[in-house]
Length: 273
Image (cartoon, rainbow, N blue to C red; front, side):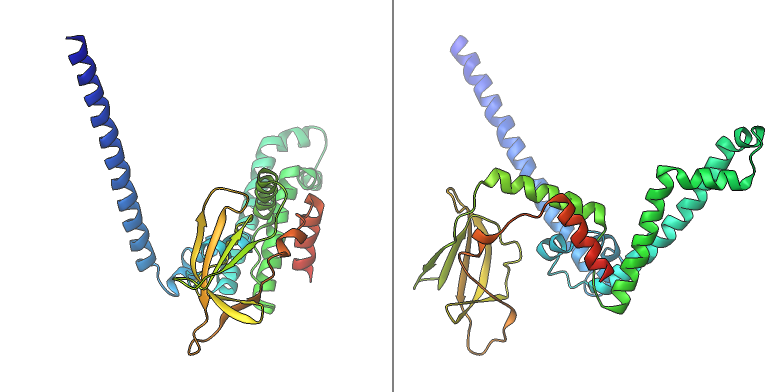
């Protein structure tokens, strides 16, 4: 009887495990279908005016890596995003001033202060500085998008991206040169790297040893010091080169993650330039 009870419990556990696996597959399936539906509804230029202004707040490297194939007009989306940021900051500043006056107005008047004193105290408050920063950032982002076609994200998210990349580099350890294998079956070139090349997606073309190779598949994870593997083919003679960039397997050795202040200053210089 004890053995029978153990078998029943084992069967029940297997049934629950199978149900959980099936439930996970179902959720993944419906999530992928929902993503396809969203991409279909927000296809083409529609994304520029709907989801584009929100995505424009992200750092450029994040957008290039995850949303590069969405066909968003990033300068236009950034201009819309910057306008929303600027007007939003202006409205929030007015609301904050009203809240400050209602909360501290009587205390200021009781001590003989007037409206200028209240305005001065509001100007010294840290929240006022934060709101004004985002207002100024919106102006700079808008002018850069309209005048030069640049697409800048917001600085706080750029600093978050810097922190995440720095932590990831520490976890991965010291870099090693890419391992390049020239193949004759299925793929013409295989590149194994210790760092993810997030922008290596079809139809990107690289130039290696004066030959052109086109990225066919994205990264494939494996074990070892070079976990990111990419497969490429020789560029067909009748195909136009898209996104050409030179490639050096040792370039990863020269990378040096910028420091915190270097990141801030580079963002400021880019926006001011």
